[in-house]
Image (cartoon, rainbow, N blue to C red; front, side, top):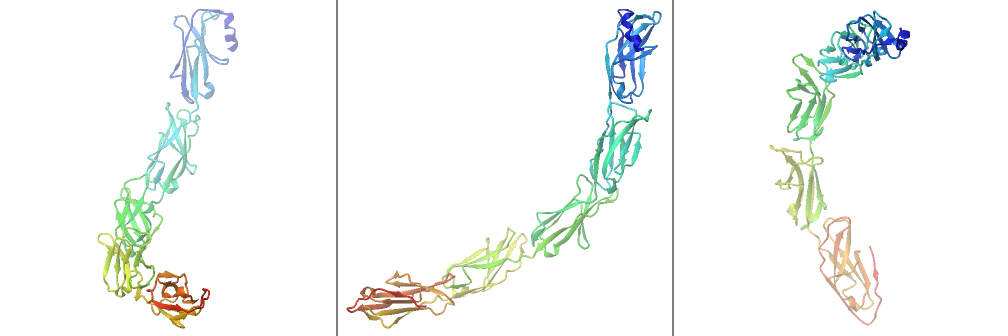
Length: 469
């Protein structure tokens, strides 16, 4: 027949051009049925030759050529020509070419309501082949088991963890089961078997704080929630939150949660556990600059509650009187002996107010500020060139280590030792005092009473200061 077509130009042709059409359409999928229709609008008896490029010819006694269950190889450019049955040497012109496109089908697989579900949920897999009918569908599950559905849907009721994994589908022709589409892109279904339990804001809290446990079952509704405190205390909530207001030490421990539905009657597994730690708050009390002070010193008591805010502070004095401070400091200015004794503090907050434990007590000792005495040797009355020894003696006050300052007529002499020794001249005459300051501490003594040195005579000795401990 190819030879016949190639020789047409040597035959007689009429100025007639047939019309070539395709039913149902020029763009089809593998497995579809396509009919080519070649029409010549004259009453002459014709037979028809269909050509698919390149050089694939077929002769039909009527103007139709039907291709059942088309393949990719059936696609291409088609033309037709008609030959007069009474005079086989007479041909029409060629029809205008028409292109038949055959698509290699890849179905689309989707999941409803979503790919991430919990045990007991219902999942529907939907396999779709667009713009074509007459298919049946094969679903391949994570264990590679196949199930055939007459429609493009497969429903799994009350999914289990074992239903999770990768799914894909393929379609085949109902009238010709040998014709298959490609496999769909795989899709993964995740089946969650337990909710998530979290604590807002933190798992370590203080007594009196508020704690909220949050049990979440993602992308699913209609649950009730059971909160379990180890070993066997249960609380049921209609929402996924449980708030414990003004927690006590007994509220601390291990918590888990579980979700359930009444219809169908489904339970999730237990969540992972979380540990709530309730700290029995013991504030810390400290004193600045130190616990042992002198009358008229300033003392600052500092009460601290670490890692928590919103407290007010109650200081308990040696006389058992309480004073409340909005900050953690209490300042006692110009302390007196009566301010000495045991102090402690605690913190409170909330309404009704919840209190911490008492701090460990701390003792403040208040003593009289000592007054030094100055001793002179050998005498207050000296001659020029003689050596005089001044000694500063401080009794009481409970200070073990002093450093000293010496003053002559109120002018400091920069000597930090207990002894002040010099070979005198007339200008050394005057009034001498001393004062003590605690080494590695903040306490200091009064200024001593003044002693008066008198210097007379004729000799002159050079000035010298010797230090003796």
